[in-house]
Image (cartoon, rainbow, N blue to C red; front, side, top):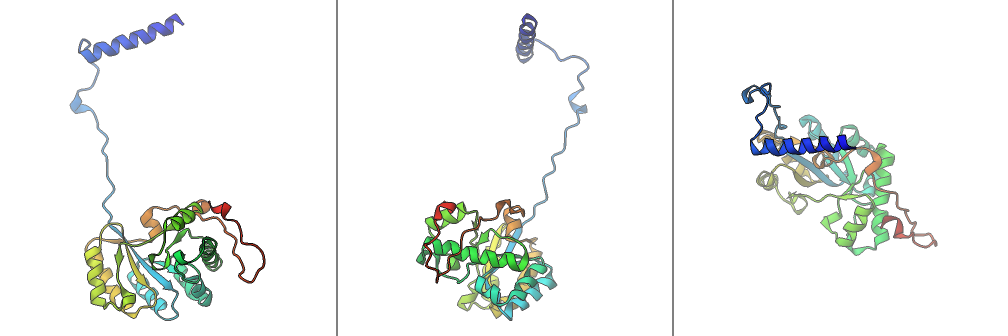
Length: 261
C-alpha cells in the first residue's frame, strides 16, 4: 500500500511541475511539425428529399406513377389506405417490388380526431396487417388523413411504436393545382430533408413529376424513402406492437388500451 501511495504522489507532483513549466519534455518527444495528425473527413453533403404519395393505390394513376419512378430510378414512399390495398393487392406488391416504401394511411381514411381511441388503433392495425400480408414487410410509419391529429393520438400511437409522418411541402394536387403550380411550390420549398406530399390518383401529379425530378437533381438532391431520410432501422425491433382489431358485429367488449399506454 505505501508503494501505491508514493506512485500516486509522484504522478501528482510530476503533473503539477509539468503544468507550471518546471519540467521540460524529454528530448525524445517528436517536434510538433513531425507529429502526424489524423485527418477528419466529413461525409459529403447529401441534400436528401423524399417523394410521398397518399390515398392509393389507385387502379390507373398509381401504375403511371410507378412508371415514372422506374424510368427516373427514384424511390417513393406510398402511404396506402388499407381498404384500397385490399382492393388492388397486385399494385401494392408492384410498389414494393420496385423498391419503394409502403406506409400506413389508416384503413378507411377517417379523421382521427373524430373517432375514439380504440378505433384509431384498429385503423392502423388493420392496414399494418394488410401491408405485412401483401409485402412480407412491417411498417411503423403512418400519416393521419388530412394531417388531423391531437396530443392524445400522438402519444398513444408513439407509445405503441408508430411514427407519425407529416410533410414540409404541400403540392395541393387534390385541390386542383396545375403542374406548373405544383412545380413552383416544390422548387420554392425544396431543402435538405424535405418531405413532399402528393397523391396517388392525380393526373397532374404524374404529368409534373418527371420535370421536377430533373430540376431537383440539377440542384444536387438525392431521392430517398422517408425511413432513409429519418435514419430509421429496418429491423422489426422498432415495429409497432399488435393491437387487437375489434369486429364491429362482435358482442365482445372493446379491448383494453392498457397495452398501448
